[in-house]
Image (cartoon, rainbow over all chains, first blue to last red; front, side):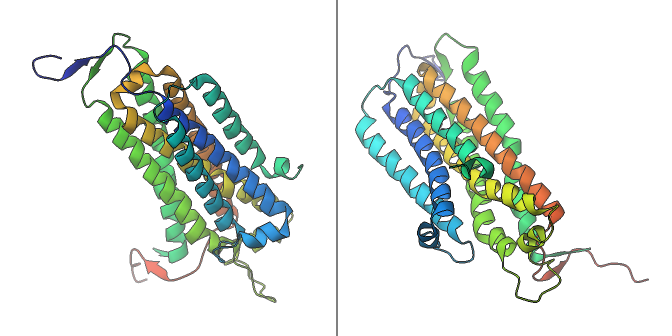
Amino acid sequence: MSAQGTILRQDTAALPNGSGAAAILAAGIGSFAVAVLTIAADKFVLVKNLFVIYKPTGPLSGVTTGAIVLWLAAWAILEWRWRKETIPLKPVNVAAFLLLGLSLLLTFPPVGELL
Amino acid sequence: MEITARSLWTLIHGMGFGALYLLACSGAIVAIYRRYSTNGQGLIELDSEFPLGIYLAVMAALAWLTVLSGTYIVYPWYRAVAPAGVANLAEFPRSLLLSNPATQQWHSIGMEWKEHVAWLVPIAITTDAVVVIRYARDLKYHPQLRIALQGFILVSLFAAGIAGFFGAMLDKNAPVEGGQTIHLVQGAKQ
């Protein structure tokens, strides 16, 4: 460190990557949940009715709230399991971006309707 | 010069929160790329991650404000069902779009995609903000985390772009109108 304390020389990571891996995979899971719940609400009347938690917005309120709850739950569980671990990040990234890509694709109505 | 309350909220949602988010994306992409792409010496300025963390946190706040105002303020006006016998559908944008075969797809593809894909944006950018704030200087030593951060911003830009494009086109074809009229500038007497 310099005399002014403005520069730090650091050679190794101080934090394991587990927390980051948990956040990244959870984001993929949460995004995928948006797509899965959207399709479920579209295909099944019972699910659609269950998702109406704010009537003016309709089933979209339940779909998005459900997905956010699943995202945060997945994040909390993964953080608890991985926070002190060093995780192989490449497969985590691949899984997360696969889930994100599927979410973009499956929320596109012509694709979602094919299922 | 006047505007209706519903139009004002649509403006705040799209041209305010949403457009600001889209503009901020390019800044975040450049900031993360420049910060980690050139210096391989492990020399990092103290506190240098703080402004980036704040920047991403503000982007996350904008993303949440955009989807929440869209879903819970503007969308209920958009999807309101027109009472039977109403001929003028100007205050019922969804019904107006579905009443004409030439505009039906703006709802069935445009709005149906927009209302869901937009929610990927706050998920992705909140993740980025938390990871940058948590790891700060340590991000230098986690190249795979940095790849994920860049990828998430690009995905969020793409998803926000889809939502923004369809939002603009929907507003062009069937604007959300109604509510109290707000007079912005009083017109001169003729």
